[in-house]
Image 1: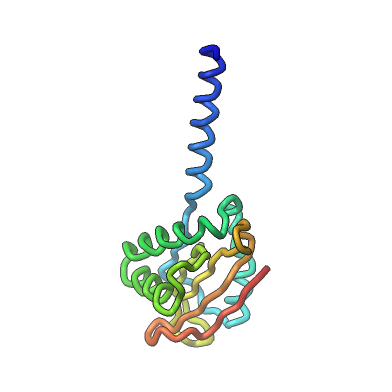
Image 2: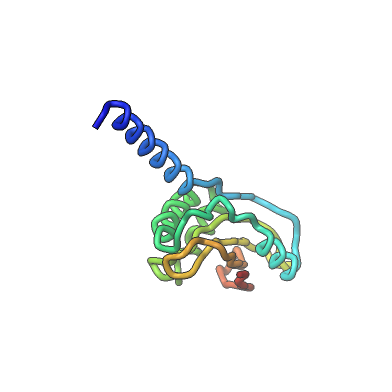
Length: 148
């Protein structure tokens, strides 16, 4: 094999490694506070949340990515810690969805935490959205919806 061919292979592998690392990284939208919403407006927010940065992530990879995002949330103060706790308690350990938006807000007059997650079919890409609205004080889920 010539040096040129070997160099081309090394460069291609390097680019693939960088690209796969970028695909697995995205900026979680974390908002301490947002405008007061009705339940329907929260659903519209979830349905319109951009998840395109996760297009190359599969449901299989989402489990590990979710754990990373939950760890990151725990470093973001009281709201982040509470959101991470609520997304851990009562959910299966190997949940194959990734939070993309966490927002403190009032929903239908209740001080809430809004979470929008990306999820997908078994082994497929994350192409769907799921909404969770939690009562911030009690932790009760007050609204849930999925969008395909």
